Length: 500
Image (cartoon, rainbow, N blue to C red; front, side, top):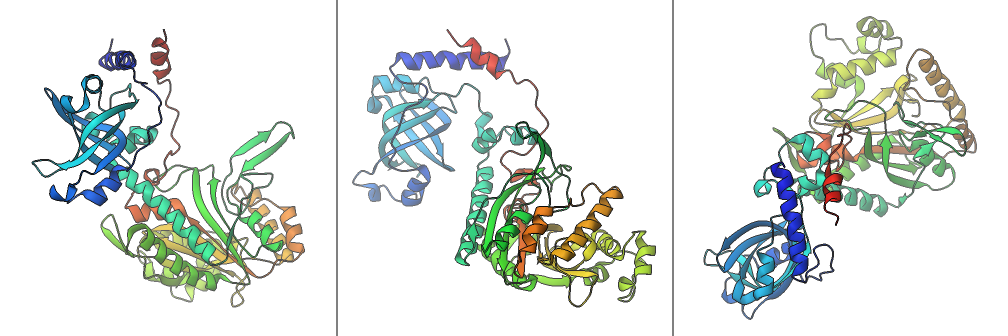
């Protein structure tokens, strides 16, 4: 028997001993009066005199440390990101509760009742008078709760990561604040939250490769959505003039520190606006998100300090010229010349060439929050044409720390032009681009009923959280990122052997 199996059997035996004392080893309601963080906020720093008369509390949590000393002991309880010391003395808790205490292991979940006091070393502690057992841990915790450093294990066993590394919990608390801030700001501006299909007969709204599934009853192939855009714009046609969705999207693409096949975005659409109106709103939105999530517009990210209170604006052409890397820097005239663009990149169209040059020379250098606007029509099949340049559209993207975190444009609302754009996408598919849009005839039909002038935007919540929590991998901000299957774990057999 391995050491791990021996510890498992030992803890399983303690389950029976705990039951013999009259406690339930799994599952019992316990009404606490305070969370541990509430106690720390309210009473940490108080003197012994300030804790009189007695402050009585009932708390619950997971045992983090145990230090036994004959007929008395100290242990630390962890709950909700807070940690409090407990003092357990045989004379105070009685014989039965002290027998229970001697069966406790690190990781067990207990309840305790008593009064607060200050130890000789000045630590706020709970003098325990009653113990209650709430749940047994059968597997050993990482030593001293600080042993879980293997990245694969942290992502695969996020529950253990959250127990062992308090800073991980902080990341996901911040994530919740980001989403709450976005939702509040949108609703304050009159947007309503909606839900659109995750399984779609025709995918669209982004340039990406979809996941395919099959509905047996209808005998049709369906696609997990790559974006909710075309459905949200159908609602604009229907008269819901400000809509948003905090949505999960699925793209059958590679995995990296910035990409996960399943990810979260917020998309919002506003009738009677344009992309310049959304530029102003986006600056306000991200500034307030940073404040709500971190308390400041200045946020550390690696060796950088990002300023969410200041967002620069450049056209795509200006960005290529400013950040050109290498010899033969083009002139403003070159960057508009189709022949020069083709010779420089080998791309078929000037727009594809410009987008390619932007990705090579500028994208990774956009460190501070920056809006890049005026995109080529070839890479923007759903955006409205620029009135000043027929080869460009009224679109912008937001870049921070070299990452794209948002995409917005004045929506194309001319169904005839949209049909031509879809035809162009079909031609790209014929040339081998399997990420190009499909033809969505129902969307064309909706547009033919009349779509008001509209602006729409999508923001990547995972990447925003990365920036605001100083996380270098998207997996650090997704609770359960996609991983290769682990193979047989063996825990089922261990639990099976415990059955009488």
